Image (tube, rainbow, N blue to C red; front, side):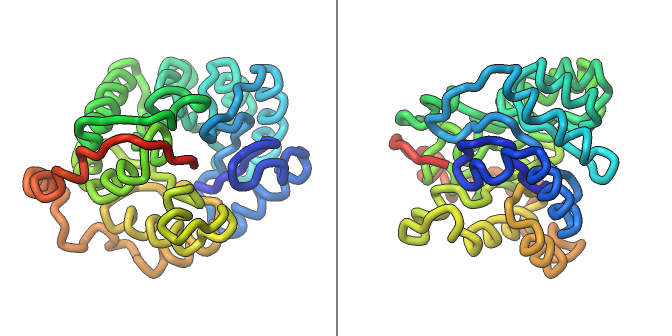
Length: 280
């Protein structure tokens, strides 16, 4: 899944593709680099981001979705029903939903849906996030959302642990360490770590544009743990890494089932990390 932010303020590429022609050209470039899905978003959900009017978000997204939909599968990255409906009408076939509430739109339209976990809302989600057991709590939330969607008639349901959304660096790393626990829940998993701040922190404070190594490492790790899709800015490099991992990425000796209890016991302290902010 290639990232296409049609926004002035996204944390990594804000303003680069706000112009529709620039956005369409970049979407086609992501396709040429090997993206299976291009994810179009018209509102930044970085920590501290202010919401934009629905009409503004819709106006940013719809022309780009319309132009790309005949060339590549398009998802819409939104938490607004009106924007999701407009994007689907324009040709989007997947709703990438950071609110995890828009499954009725997907059911009505007959399109796919991604339920992402987010604690709080973008303006405040990094204000001392806390979990007693981040893996268990995120997994339980995603399964509840997925079950509601399936029962409501959605045929394609993905789950996303929401790396960086209401989580500290320790929470993010714990979730990555236990991706097989989420995969074992039985729904295809989408993971987005690309250029996020915890990678910069691990690399000594590198800015978003200098986080390629960490982005690739975590994407490859996710693939080997059985994740079905990774959401990335650097499509060509990630596709190259995916080809090296190959079709047997899940055959690494880890336990997708049965190993959950042992893995959780070994990492219990990591799953019970405390507070502190962490920006995307």
